[in-house]
Image: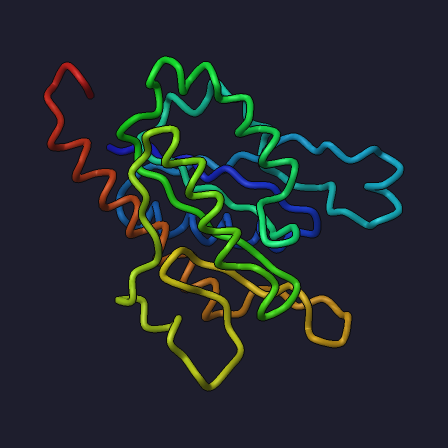
Length: 208
């Protein structure tokens, strides 16, 4: 059985919700899914005043955990068209894994959240994929076989680079992931897990 890690950072719970949907898709494919999050970097006072969601059930990941998985799916909100600093800080600590080729050949994917429809979803997905490529990972996005990303009857996240959601309702209020966006996250999780399982099955026994 392929092992898949869903590694995320979430300030207000949107990416946390998407991560659980990705995990459901992974399990639907018959792979195992672990959901973990990266450490918070913001000071406690900022976290409290900003109303960050602190009651997240996922355990904190360690960089060394990454080698234990056949696929790693990254979830991060957008910060000015790039990944959140909490996720970047965590990935910046993988130099030793990079040096030892420990992540080469693993499947990688990314999903994200932005405050607005044009808030940098695709640049965040692609810039995060760049890091995974440097680590030697095989990038898998959200193919157009998920037809929900082409819907025109509603505002929705989703692109061929990965699943996404919009976190603002357009009036400064909170917007939770829609059913279509969650369906995209499940699809991406299932798709990545299926590819990871195929790769695991095809490896020589000594490499499994």
